[in-house]
Image (cartoon, rainbow, N blue to C red; front, top):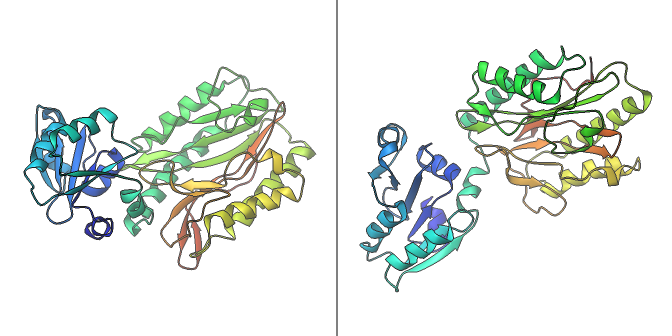
Length: 350
């Protein structure tokens, strides 16, 4: 972290995004502020509710205050006469906190908005982080196995989502990584639709998108099922989505631009006249947040590195008919990739 601060000519950084606080010092509470100096030990500020927790978790000095965290931090920073350029996280600090910090610090101090400083450190996962994500993915996959194969009409989307969440917790997850998506029939055309009261009928598509949180790390997968015998149209379109995912996976290796991965999936679908049915990017990073860098989109210039964990999730969506998506969580390796999702990709027939 010291090198990153020096590179931006910062004397310190005020960290307010909870995932970044957790990454830098280990604290998982919901109310904390971390001051990271270019030289010296970071200081975590929190309130009395988290005194014991912070003492157990934080790998740094902890200061507990009954005042606002920003006021306590500003008071201490104002005493550091050598600190002239202080960075803050532009994407997570509230304006009211910025104003309080600006008011508390001498006018000679410069407050510098920063973007993606800590996030760039989080881009490449350590072997321990990858293993945690792998275990998280195993929980989600096992929940899918336990629940989806036994679905029968007239079960409702909300009931299936609730059971998947229950099973993930039973298997050791802290919570779902996001609001579990279960969509039937024509509602599968909603890429991020919410489960509703729609009941399953014979012939319906079933789209299930789920992930678990384990030790703070997330996972993400999507699988498809059909109630009854699939039509020839469904089989053909499903194979085309699998082909698009394979095309994207073949691009995964260090040095490849994120946009190239997206382009491979998109061109695969374009060859079959399905370009307009693919309405989102091919994937995104996964870690302490379910959506983090790198994004695998049309204009993303970042180049892949070994240790990056991403999703590969091409899909097609047709209003009034439904949608198909296949998604895996994948780690980039030194010579390619490793799929972390321990589940086959065959279309499940219920």
